[in-house]
View 1: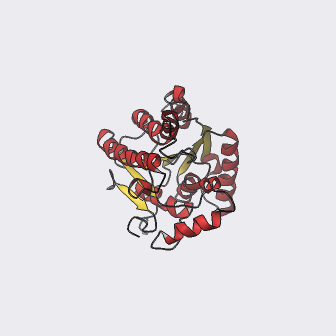
View 2 (view 1 turned 135 degrees about the horizontal axis):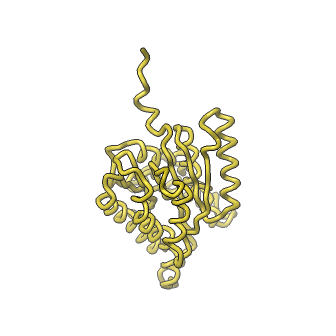
View 3 (view 1 turned 90 degrees about the vertical axis):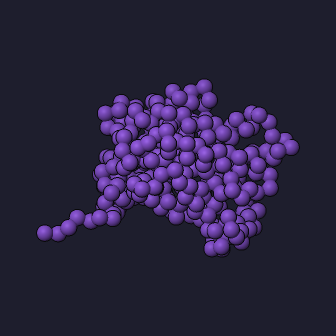
Length: 269
C-alpha cells in the first residue's frame, strides 16, 4: 500500500483569501496557493483588475492541469474608504464564505496603496491617514471580523505584510517606516488575540512589482541597480519569491507571531 505524501498536500482543498490578490506579491501568492491545491479567492478595490486576474489564474490553472477553475473566485473590496472600513470587508467575507457557511482556512493581506508619501517636512495628518488606512487600519479591522469566517484551528492563518524599511529606514521614508513597524507589532498582538488562528507578518525588501511604476522610467535602471547593491544577494526580489514566504506561513502550523524577512539580506548588508 502506498503512503500518502507528507509535505506537499497540506493546502489541498483549503480555502485561501488574498487581499491585494490582483497584482504583484498578492497575485503570485494566489497563484502559488492554486499550485498547492487550494481553492483561491482574490480581492481588490478594482473590479476590472479582478476580472483580468481571474482570467489569468483560470487559464494558468487549466494549462497546468491543476485544480478546478470553477473554484477560483474574486470580489471587490475598497479598503481605502475610511467610512466603510468595516462594512466593505464584511460584504467580501460574506461573499467569500457564503455567509459563513464555508469558512476560510487562510487569509493573506498584501493590499497597499502606492508609496507617494511626502517627506516629513511636507507631510500632513491627511497624508499619514491615507498611508495607514489600507496598510494598518484595514488589516486590524479585518482581524476583528475574521473569527466569524475562519476555522478556529492552528491549521488556519492570517499573514500580514510590512517591509524592511521598518527595521532599516530609507531617507525620506519615516512615515512608511513607522507604518511597517506598526504592522509587525499588530501581527504579534493579533497572534495572542486570535489564537488558535496563527498570525504572522511577511517583511519584504525591494521587490520588482507594479509599485516600481512610481519611479520615473529614466531613473528606474539606476534605482534597480541601487536596490541590488543594498542586498547581499545583489538582486531585487521577485513576487514569485515572496509568494513562497506566504505559502510557508500558511503551511507551517508551528509558526505564529513571527516576522518572516525576505529581503536578500538588506538588513545586514
